[in-house]
Image (cartoon, rainbow, N blue to C red; front, side):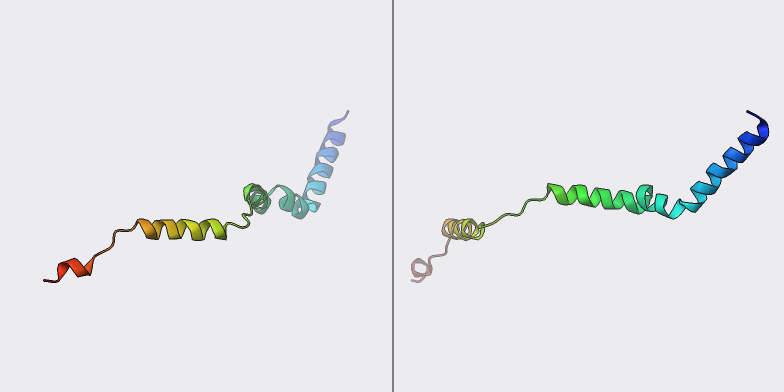
Length: 76
């Protein structure tokens, strides 16, 4: 392999990389990393259904446990 062939091969690789840079940037760049992280976070989320009944029962239970003031005993 001659040095001229090696230089031409290196130039060809650089030329192809420069031509494909926008596509490589979309696939491996900062924005692609953000998209992958967001997709990973979204995949771990769960949709909760029919929790409103449990929530209402929890609120009612908490309200029943709150201390109350008895105004009838305070009056002389």
